[in-house]
Length: 176
Image (cartoon, rainbow, N blue to C red; front, side, top):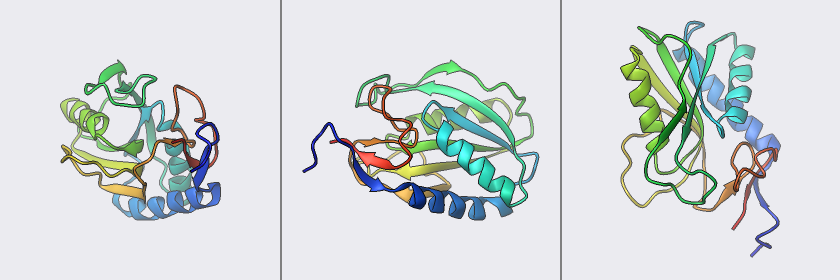
C-alpha cells in the first residue's frame, strides 16, 4: 500500500483528457449554444473548464454558470445534507441545462442541483460527472454521462480534494 501522505496516481493527466474528449463527443450532439452548463463548485471547476473547452472545439459554445453546493466541508464523509452557498446567476426558464460535477458518490449534490435548476424553470436537465464511485446504497438519480468509473478510494486531484488541498494535481490520485 502507498504511503498515505503520497497520492498514488490512478488516472494520469493524458487519460483524464481522453475521457473529457470522449464525453464532449457524446454530449455535443445533444446540446446547442443556448445550453447552460452549470458547474458545481468547487470541485467541478477543473472538469467544467476542460469539458466546455472540449465542447467548443466541437462547435458547441455553451453558456456558463455555477452553483456552489457543499455537502462535505473539509471532511472525508458527506454530512448527509447539501448547503447552497451561492445560487446560479443565469435565468433558467425554458432552458436546457447541463450540470457538471467532478465526482458522483452519494449523489446528494447532483440531486440537489437537478432540483434547483428544475425549480428555476429549466425545460431539460442533463447531468454529467467526470468520475462515478461505487456506492453501497441506491442513489436518487443516475448521471446521464459518466467519464470514468472510479474505484472506491479516497480520490484527490483534478478538482478533488483532501481538506481543500491537492485539488490542483493534474492526475486523479488515491490518498488512502
